[in-house]
Image 1 (cartoon, helix red, strand yellow):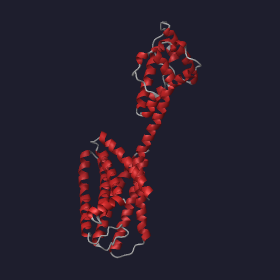
Image 2 (spheres, rainbow, N blue to C red):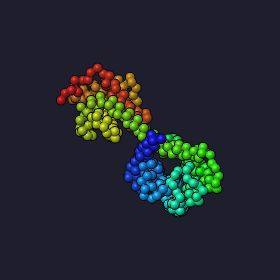
Image 3 (spheres, rainbow, N blue to C red):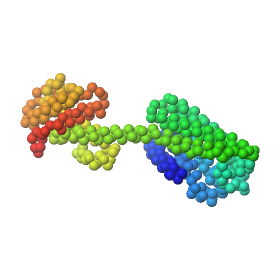
Image 4 (tube, one colour):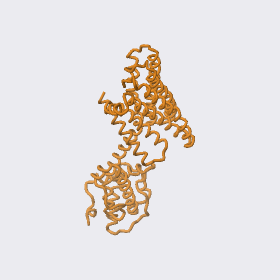
Length: 386
């Protein structure tokens, strides 16, 4: 149980930290602010339920204070979750108006549970839901108000979540369906507890297994909600990491072509302090910048040398491995001819132009040419000249 709490707490901190970082860069984004406050409230509710925090709160506010504080943050969590959908689905003005109206049931629930906690102060032992004497009207009112508000707010959020999940694409839809499953589980558990509260309030007996079922549902639903909230971001981050790893490989594979052209045209360098491999590994965000830089420098060098390579119908091509080898031979001969001062016999043209659009497609062509240069047994002597 402690291990599970640590895992859930760690996930809470990671997701919340990521959201706080986002909101720092976009402080006026109302949906982002709502989901950040939702996660912060969820983290507070989860953390304050742990024994060390509950003990401190009990020493300050009495036996029922931990229960009240924990539930207050749970109410705030579902309230901000509703606000997220209200801000996202409507224009800002209508979303703010609807959110203000939703504050009314939230405020009434907080007031009612606070009064119930104060009224039960003389008889409240601070036990869990299973152990409290529900025949005390104040305690029964506390749990009934809390569960009814949770059912209302969670059901509302569940309807919005399902609507968004049906209209979304993967991986966002997967995360939303996981969140919908968690919300439906917590709403069902809250509804079960509301019924059990009424039964126990009237002196009825409830089998312990029935009460445990609702507790187990919530214990599974909370981590599931976190997984759903973090899944799209995790998938996006993994995709970015895979793309950067691929670009790092392409960056290194471009080195034979880049070094050849940079030796011939050092003035075309976009920056004098080119990245070293260890720098790329230490600063992942720099990969994209150096990747773009190296591709542009290679392309500029090829345009400069193209008048020596041959006519346009020969040089403008979507390279294959065999044509890349042929172009590599022509490139070395062209650079040698230029270094010897020969005049260019043709006009400048684009070289190794891909059929597909985009920088990555262009780089794949350059990499084929660079690999062909790498396969050559030796480089021309002029390249090593000062």
